[in-house]
Length: 447
Image (cartoon, rainbow, N blue to C red; front, top):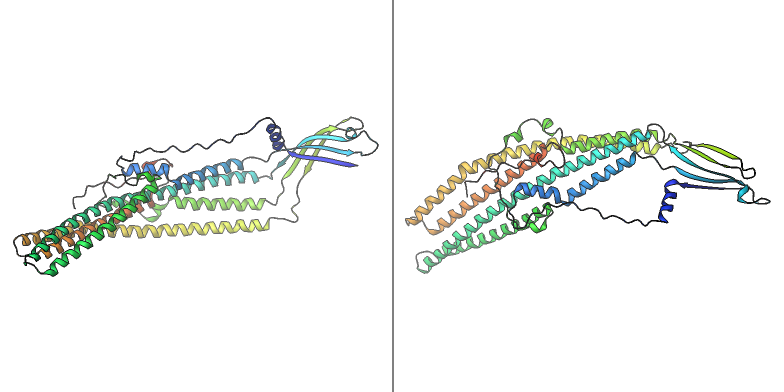
């Protein structure tokens, strides 16, 4: 007696049948709509942020990971496909009419998960979506901070390049005058050498600043996902006064909804569900089958009901349960570590912001006015013939160095402010750009 049993997935049978009649085509993915900004259009901070949120490849990848997590969550709700079973049983090989003498049945079987498994799978899928959303919000917040920092760096370097150009012009004029006075015998040759050395130094420093400005522009264009905007003019100013609201409150209050905290908290919740799911895994899923057919010899109609389940004797899922418990401990430790890291970052950033804000005020209210007053006095003394030209050149250089130091501190304050804004940002809808406010622009009154 020979038994022939064919067990096929119902989806596989349908696919085979359909494939014989249809040819499937793969649809091309629809590209994201880009924000079109002409190269010649001046770029504001608001426009730069909008461009980055739409075109930055890393953010687009994070958005794609969120879509993938949503797909996994949808798939977690689905049951396995039923199986189509065609059975030829009790088929006599000799002294018979062949296949017509066999007992023939056709039916469907379905695996029914153990109670609670499917609901945990669905909840874990939902946690995966939440985790991806938190990771997307974190990357979005980081991108906004980076774009702001690069935007401010370009603005500051442009101003610093202008200061270097003015220094070159003043030093070049002074070196020419000194050379003429030396040739006329009115000044010593070492004064000419000192003036020429300062001129070469000014040119070298200007070249370094230009190179740094070019790199900053390229970094900004990369963050925007628009390398064609390398040379686009920026419009805007750096904030000259600190935002005291950013330093108010406690770390726990300001960081309670930080995206990184949301991400690790969701990861812990996912690990807890995974631990519960691992505990249920040894409990077997039941496979139920229903079939109908005929007995070959008599042609009598028959029905058949089958029930099968695996016996958890050899594999009780101990290793997976141990791994799930370890994942919970890992996620809990990561949550604690991220909370401590955020508190440390908050304290350090607030302290840096206070310090550099005070330095900016000191430069603006005390150091810059004194440098400008000293330059005015030396210019007056030189015009009256009381001071040599080299003293004027030295004072001009000192004044430009003070101006450069002021803009460096101003840039540091704005970058630190962007870091603080990123730390205290509340996680909101992915496309709500109003959650990230640009620094209040204040026109500089100093060179």
